Length: 343
Image (cartoon, rainbow, N blue to C red):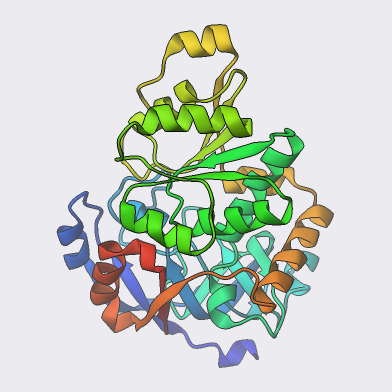
């Protein structure tokens, strides 16, 4: 697109103020005309096709996420579109005209807008035959699952435990683990989710609210040699996992769906049984991964998605004017999949 053809303003979803009360947050959202910021240096301007809502977006809207931006602000951490303008650097210019999946956790505006200005390093070139919905959700969940699986494989763990096993990251991780023949113990919070995973052919499923959950987790972890757990919940679950798993086990926190600090940790398990607690942050993992390795992972993920072997569940698509309705539907049943916002 000729820079002269880029409009001066755009429509965007705008958050006026943070609030832990979701109802008040929704009343703080509106669709407004905002200035289009042209790219400079390493930046590119992406004409957005679609952007999802993730649990991290909900936490951000409520002011409960690690990323805090000055309000009013355009939310959204990821999405997909086409680069229509670029800064002056080689990295930026190399993306001109390309279709990308983009993401950002910096201090600027986000992806819930017609145009998104972002550093070229935060753009992943995507194939033309990758569906829009999958490209919109490529940057966060699939790469999070890939990063977690690399931890399991490099650490030579025989089996994995994962919480929030009905979620999207867990679905990706479960399928990736199947490719490498690594058993996964799936922890869910309802019998309905147990049945859903069983119908998908999963063998090891535990309801965290069921009878003797801790005893069953202890026994199954020992049986399979599960010495790494990926926890998206936090709160008491983090300690429960660490206490129940074999000597030398690690629990990796990558989410905090409970909204509570990690707790219930038996200090003696750490001191005398070599157990440890760590964290996974996608942005850090990307920085620590070589460009060649990242491109290899991206190509594999996109191939798998195009073949239908991996996919993000999308429950509905909404226009910007339907933002409140969309968020209410998403929060009411996240297990049905993501929602997408389209210009």
